[in-house]
Length: 255
Image 1 (cartoon, rainbow, N blue to C red):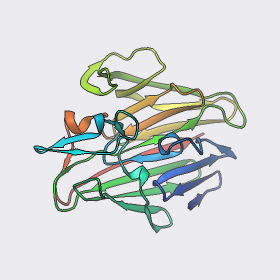
Image 2 (spheres, rainbow, N blue to C red):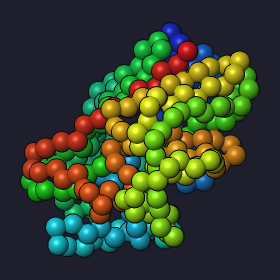
Image 3 (cartoon, one colour):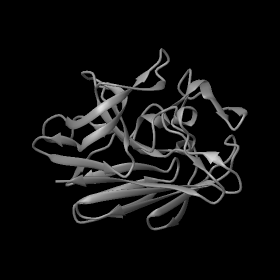
């Protein structure tokens, strides 16, 4: 484990999965710290794709590849949350993009903690061949902390992606319906804020401009910044050519 501390907060990074396993602010654990499967706790990286890869099949540049089905009937949230990450320094970890990913490449994350914020930066690097790439994070925030009232989420967005019968985005944008949600939002007009009245307020910001908001679970809510919508690899892929990188960051700021 990698442990970071400041005067008000502490963070624990687990190299197994490259996840933020714990974030404690003013003595309060903000994250869900365990779950029945790797995609149900902490704040884990989604690389080299985010969300659902329909039926585990990737089609790119005239070829097709199959990936293990992790959330039937789809392959969910990429591969790096299932991999070991090497610890490069006091706040930096790295993993190779390896089998069954056919294109190579590697990913790096850096974690910078101070008194009022944690900033996580990700880099996804291609090596000697072009590849589609996405990146993002999937934090699981507790609805009820050890003190204060249950979590309240506030944000404003222009639209969400419509999905088909298999819950896969089609590329069409539609008006935002009433919650609860498990949807990809775009056009946010303000950063999402989670308030636990009587305890802490958390603002989530990112250089990425797509957000999956998942408020269906009773015990948690997820606010997930990512570089594109689920199924982007088939809708409008971000292509990294040899030697290029996809870079982004997520900031968690508390008050």
